[in-house]
Image 1: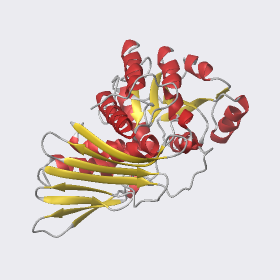
Image 2: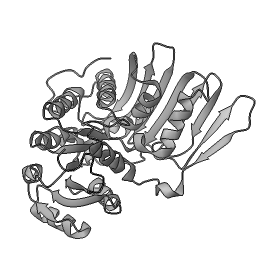
Image 3: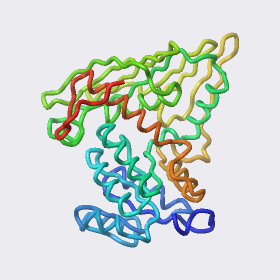
Image 4: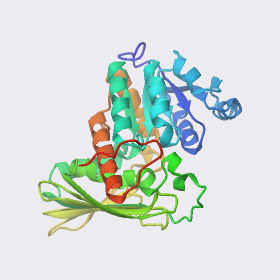
Length: 344
């Protein structure tokens, strides 16, 4: 990237593509970072972009995605559209020479994800999925403990994420054209948590309750690994779950009792010892902050890296491969998909 790598005194200039709730949350965190500058926003409605720009003090408001993609004064674009549009939106930016942070789930399927990765590598641009959980300091502490053998060999991972609803048929979470259903919107978190600790599974089994529109209202999946470990993941848009996670090893267990993908604490249990609680550092900001993924993007750009160490592209592809496998098992396919999801 011209003008940033190796020059830490310069601010990283951000553009935001889309103006919905997640775009606003990201912008609110971004404007508080001294090394970041929000310089442009784009929407398919010029009025929406102008309102967003006024709200967050953004310099330029575009009424088309293409205009933002062509803005050479933008170092990196945060793609915050619904995930059914990620392939098109992120692809426009990469082809125009922009670096991209793309909201999760990365795309609808593995094929689209692989196309974006190929574009990033063809155009020598940075690309990262906005899996903010992977950048969370307390999650990184948990991962380090597991890797250091604090609970021995990992045997099981469990995680759930469910919303109570009910969501009407017209809601985006039930719209097949928007990639609706529990799995991609919510299940990506439990699946990504399992991948973080165990990697890609060798086998996937799954069951789901399907809506009349053809999306999953709730899905449960069992991920199996060659070493004998298992991961049990569950997601739902028809019942609020505890949103907790647990990692069990041969010598102990780690429990994340609430909001596992942005936790305030977790508890380490080891055989023969008192439980030990790990708390989030207040200096890291509120648990809902998206600042850590922005900081990781800016670190990588300044270092001249084309992908994140915390959210590597091969890992994103592996998660998408698992999500495709789950969808193949439960029989969910989205409009325009001409191929069966890839099998694990």
